[in-house]
Image (cartoon, rainbow, N blue to C red; front, side):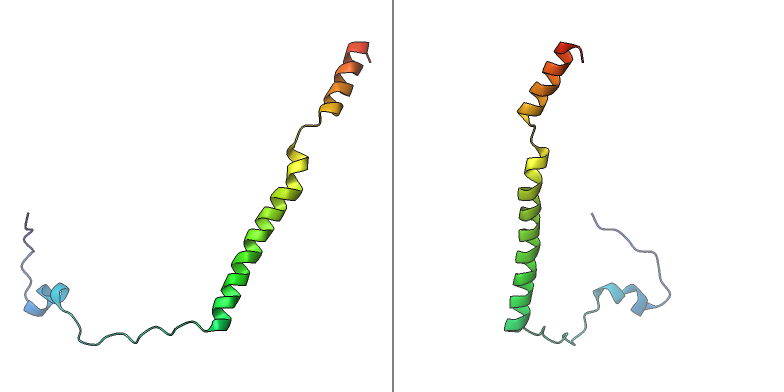
Length: 79
């Protein structure tokens, strides 16, 4: 399906979307070894922090069976 454009008084405005520049952007600089190592260490530090917080936080999330039994025995005694 071809869409017709509205008539424009200037031809260069109508053809602006088809215009391509012959000037190429400069090539990206390659990251140095130090930059790659720094990014890798930062990523490893973040992952290690997340894993460490899970390891430390898991005991707090687990249910302690002895505490539940103590509360149930006290409740059954009428205290």
